[in-house]
Structures are given as C-alpha cells and as structure tokens.
Length: 404
Image (cartoon, rainbow, N blue to C red; front, side, top):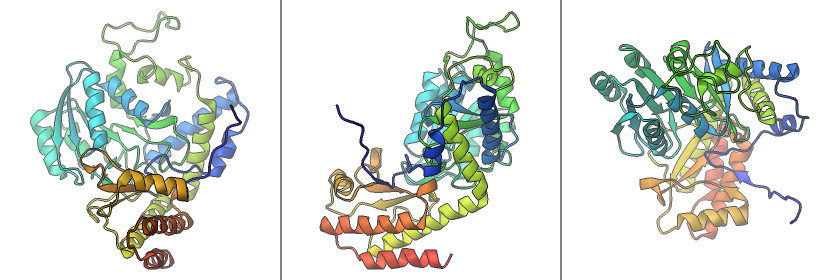
C-alpha cells in the first residue's frame, strides 16, 4: 500500500463535473455533531438556499444523503404505492431508470417512447395524461444520455386537473438552465450535486410541495425504537426506511427526530456550492452555461466535427458530437485520458459508439477550460489520424467569447 495519489484530470463529462476549489476548502473544516446548534443552523441555511435554487417557496426542500439516484428513488418510493398508475415519457436512459424505480415500488407503469435524440411535444404527453389520468407522471428534464432538454412548462397544469402528481428528474439541468418549480407546477423535483452545482457526488437536493407531502404522509410510519405514542402505525407504510421522505421530514424540521447520521462534510459542500451559485445569480449562471455551450459547439464545428442534432432542444451544459467514421470510441477516449489527461463520455443504448458527450457544467463552464479542452481534444484527434482544423476551432470558440 502507498499513500493515496490522485492524478490531475480535465473532466469534461456530463457528470461528475470538476469541483470548485472553494467547495473543497469548505469540506476541510472539522466535523460537527449532527445536532450541534452550529450544524443545525447550516442545515436550516441549506434548506433556504435549496428553495431559492429551485425557484420555490416549498417548505420541504432539503438534501438526501446519497447520489442523485437516491433522490429519484426516495421520491418515487414515497409517492408510488403498489398498484398506482404511473406514466413515464422515455426519451433516454434516465427515463428508463424512472421505469425501473416505479416498477420496484409496485406501480402500474405506462410509458410513452420517442426516438433517442428527440424530445416530446408537450401536447403528446398531455393527451396521454388526459387519457390515462395516472396518479404520478415522472419525467426527466435534462436527459444527459442524448443531450436533450424536455420542455415542461405546461405538463404540471394538465396533471393537476384531475389531482395527479408531477415528478421531475432535474439532476443534470439544475442550476444550469431555467427551472421554475412553482411557476411550472412541479410537485417534486430532484436536483444534482455533481453536475452544474459542482460539488462532490453523495448529497442530493430535492424539493416537494405541501400537496405531495400530504399524500405521502398517509403512509407515514416512524421506525420502531424512536416511535412515540402520538406516531401512527400503518399497514401501507413506505417500504424503504433510509429513503422514506416522511421520516426525513421529521429529521429536517424542528422535531429533529433522529433518522441517520447526517453527512456533515457533504452538507458543508452543499452549503458552499449553493452559496456560490446564488451569489453569482441564477440568471447569470444560466447565461454563462449557454455562452460556454455556444462556444464549444462553434469550436467543434469549425474543426470539422458534426454536432449531434444541433439546435434541437439541446441541453446547454452537454454537447453531443458525432464520433468520426472509423474511430473506435473506447480506444480514443482511453488515449485522450491517458495521454492528455482529459475525460469525456460515450453514451448508452442505441447511441453507444456513435456520439461523445462533453459536459460544461458548473465550475467547468469557463472559457479557459473550454479553450484548453478544444486544444487537447483536437491534438488527440490529429494524433488518431482524424483531419481537423484545430486553429479554426480555437478561433471560432474565442470569437464567441469575445462577442458576448
């Protein structure tokens, strides 16, 4: 065994993103007890900043200790009872994850499907909602497997006409593009840590409204050992203990009912990341992500590469580029990582071996990182025998930045 050594990388994937050094510095502080008043104050401040970050007044805005998948599962397993009707529009890998989670929760799952690389016309979804009237509609906002951003502003109103609930996976879009939780009538939303927030994976901000809370609290059962005589017992309790949102409500409210040992350092990271995002300003942060996305696209096109479905509901923090003919996806990405210390991602399913996914998220969404990436990426392509115009790529990206 040797002392841990981490090699330097330029991480340009759609998650995890590079972490802001100020977040790492915040994480180096000493541990506090989870019920220390100093720490519960941090918890309260985190809840308030989560509200602001989601553009909501929801009381129930707090983090789940776990990766974004834990946030998705906490929401789905708390709202979906066995036999509940669930509609899931699928346009990439993470729609399929919602299908998996809803089925494991016992839901009667209905899917809408469209080709990967496209999104749904909201009218198509609304028509199916009106036909099925499902209890839950679960949909991804930013689908990183295809680089698509699904319009959502009209779906919530349609779901609410008959009393249903709209659940949104905004893991990749959170703090990188417009996300109007209250205005769009989103009942429960899962954000992400390791993407546009630019903190380490392992803690996930979520928010849900009072009507969602009222529904899940019909299944609330505090665990044996800390249950009091005023806490009800129910036959249809939420099956997960760790991911039970009703018990986490007690943990993140003045009751402070012990549930698990809070991830202290992760909360430090969350606090610093949210503070930096809100200090920058949500509108400025959104504009920065869009500017960087435009510059990267321009640079790659000028080099001679093809952007996958350019202009068709692109995520402004993920660029998808077609892999040049004759180039092996995995071999090239390995070369890029080992020789140039740059990491990008391939894709999944029908897009495996066809596109690369390049993330410009949070801290990574800066002109310097993008210019460095274009230079190293272009050099790796040239070394692999792909004819690209590297100077043209750098000039095109720089022009976008100077014209902002």
